[in-house]
Length: 213
Image (tube, rainbow, N blue to C red; front, side, top):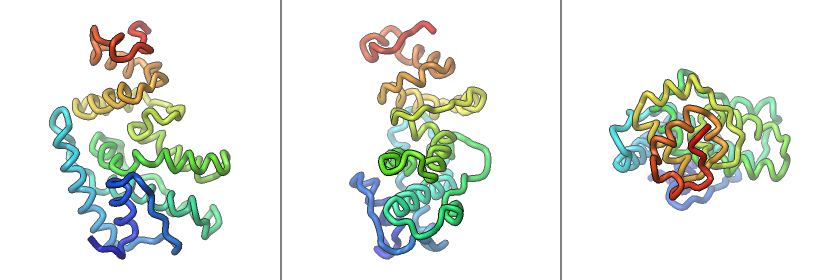
């Protein structure tokens, strides 16, 4: 692994140790570094899908790299503010294109760690401009924010479409149950699928879950 590739080092260290690496220099990435990062994330994805409940969506390289960039830039700007907010928006642009199971699961390789950065930023300044941007990303990629205490605005029509993929639906519902995110059960599509998933064992596995809407 290229030890001079800061973004790759950050994501690798985060995924292997759960800790962030902060650098003192201004964060920037080259196409070559992003290409190496994409190769690493693709391998990580291939390792994860071995434990998926059914056939996994194909790896979305663009989404995976975008998610990693949000983590990398978010962590660096948490510690170092080198530019005015108006200039920082260039680092945190929302990924273009339609949301798919592929993009959600690929981006989640890194985005699952984004709530930790957001909470650290809130502790410093709840109204920080970067908090608002990162939260908007987590609203769109809600799978990565399950169980993190955010008030997620679920787009039922969009989630219904995503749930057409059996693998994504199962992973999403499993994570809601694992994290015991009771707030998400207020949404009919999530509530119905949890009830089906838990069946007669719902009271044993999750006493707070109410089977009747």
